[in-house]
Length: 343
Image (cartoon, rainbow, N blue to C red):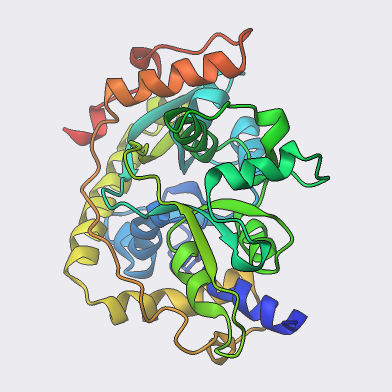
């Protein structure tokens, strides 16, 4: 049995690459408030802050790290933040319930198979998607698959099950979580049969167990053949219209950060993120509390420059959201996208 302290130490490592920080910047600079989830798509924004690129472009950016999806959604709805990194389906959901937001660009899209995975612990004896679903069919009190609520993950797992010929029954098979850090920790402790997680959580989970613990994770699916949606950047429409120049400065710094990130070495990127992530999410913890070797097998992916979300990707996600919520009026692509900041 792993100790509670070990699991807390493991959870610390889950946010290293997110590197969310509120660095001291000149108080007299115009300000934007940006919220980031602990996912790969947030890394360029976080490093732009670390490299003081926003300040270089005459902008103060307050980064608000929130691992709780519901808290971030509410903050956006209430206007407490100006913009955020999120998923396509979430943006459509927020726009459908009256949050006046605009999709300004993509943030990150992985082309590698295995960047999203359906994982289970080996001691459950589950070796296939069919065997996983059968656990619920036999009347278990646990749902088969734990997923992050209001995220693209549900879209992807629905697509996977449908492609494999299994019924898509969210009420029957899915348990919904608001916090990806918490979900990953619970999977590591065997408190859920399986979970869908992206990188870098997959690498963390595969590496964190001590050598004397023989219960590796089973990859029930690496979503091969499923077209994954990109993470995106959204701003409130009022910010787009009233603070256009500030958003332009944000994107100037963002593009510079992407270039620098792709030119930086792996160790440099990891080192830069560690202290900031610990400070914001786990105050009082030190770098030595992070398990040694936890990131040895992780490779920093190539980050593309921001681009337009394709109409096809948006429309596929819009139809999926409309199917889940048949009374919602999901906005069209033209209503919630702009290419102004990519020109």
